[in-house]
Each structure stands twice: as structure tokens, then as C-alpha cells.
Length: 279
Image (cartoon, rainbow, N blue to C red; front, side, top):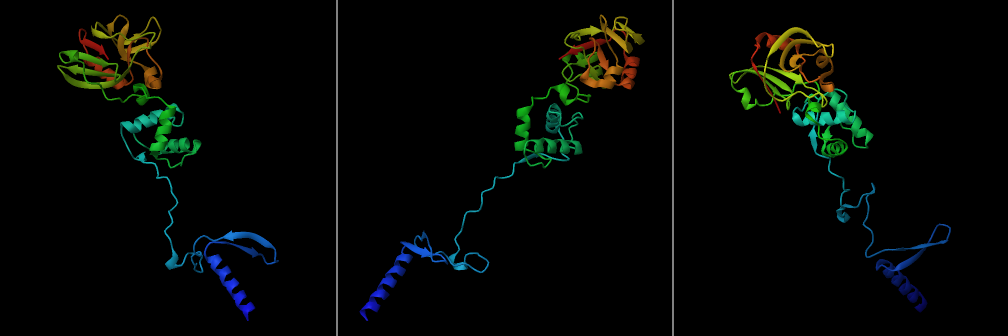
């Protein structure tokens, strides 16, 4: 009948409209109208039983973008001046209590982990570029005494004035003393100087007096193996230096912390030998 044919035509047009991207109206299980669903273009791709697109219908979707892991600069077992500097900075912010050693050891790993955790960074214990920038932003460039608070700094190159004769060659830069004879280094040792209020004088001097068991009359302190070179200033052993390192200072003398070394030095140095104190 014509009526039946018209119904079929309307149904066909409705189906064509759905496939062509028009808006259709749907009802739920109770017969209530639900908001229209718009289908753009073609039907959604078929799915397999596990919910993944069928093989013929898969489209490449961009993978989730993840930030690349920060480049690791230093980690457990590394050695060198850069590690020593990082340790000194960790010491400045009280995450590393022990003095810098130049070796990335277990204590350094624990300190870096704590620093990272406190700041919401991945606590790997490895010092990566992100952690390093954060640490640098909170600290200052370590001074020489911070890098070697208990000594061990390599001796600076000798001053030219130390290259002839018998010389106590004392560098304020590296805080070391070289005992030199005719340009050859016989021994080296860590030394400490006076504070800003009682500075150790710089220049060229001579040893004018030696006193094995000297006691300061001004400060009433022991000055064993004293070798005087400028007024009351002398090279001598300091028990305070041995105990406190560079967290203390002398009253202007050149303190030596190693009693064995200064004892041997005292036995070799003669009155009249040259003393050079320089930066």
C-alpha cells in the first residue's frame, strides 16, 4: 500500500540522517527522552571484546607526554672537586654534617635524598640537574675553608721567592706550608692563620728564634716547636687546630696541626732560614 511505502521511505530517511551526522532523539529504558547524541561523520570504530579498537579501525593516538628524567650529574661512587663542592653546599643547608671528602659516599646519598624529599623532588639520592639547580639557588659558592674545613687542600704553587735557599714557604691561598731546599719540596703540612683582627703578616722574613717548649706570655697558651719569624708570630704546633680545624684561628701565628710533621720540621729548620708568607 502507499501508506506502507511512505512509512518505509521515512524510516530510510531517518536512518540516512543518523549516518550523515544529523541530530537524533533517543529514549531510555523507561521511555523518557534523553538528550540528543550527535554523531559526526561516520560511525565509531568497532571494538573487540577487550574494549580495544578492531584491527582495521585502529588509529594512532599520541602517547601521554611525560617529562624526560633530569640528567644525573653525580651519584654514589663518583669522586672529584665537583662532588666536594656539592658536599660543601649540602653542609651549608645542614643536610650533610660531615665535612666534604670529594667522594660521593653513603652519607652524601642520604643527604641528597633528604634534600630532595623536603622539596618534593624524586628522592633518588642521585644529584641530578634539577636538584643541583635548586641546591645552588639556596647556597653560595663554597670558600676554600668550606671545601677543606679539616685540611687536605693541595698545596699552592710555590712563590718565586721560595725557589732558592732554605725556605718555609707559606701559602694563605691553600693554607699550606712547604718546607723547601733549593727549589725542592721536602715536606708539606696544613696550616692555620690569624683572624681578621689578628692577621698573620705577609712578606719575606727569617727565623730569628726557636723554642721547643714555648709558652705564650701574652695569652698563656702552649706553643710547642715555635719558630719565630716576625715579632711574636711563629710557626708552631697547635692542639686547638688539631681539635677544631679551621673553625678556629690563631692570634697571628702560623699554626700546624700535625705534631709529627712540625716536630720533624723543627729539627731541620735553622735560625736564619727564610720564611715567605704569601697569597
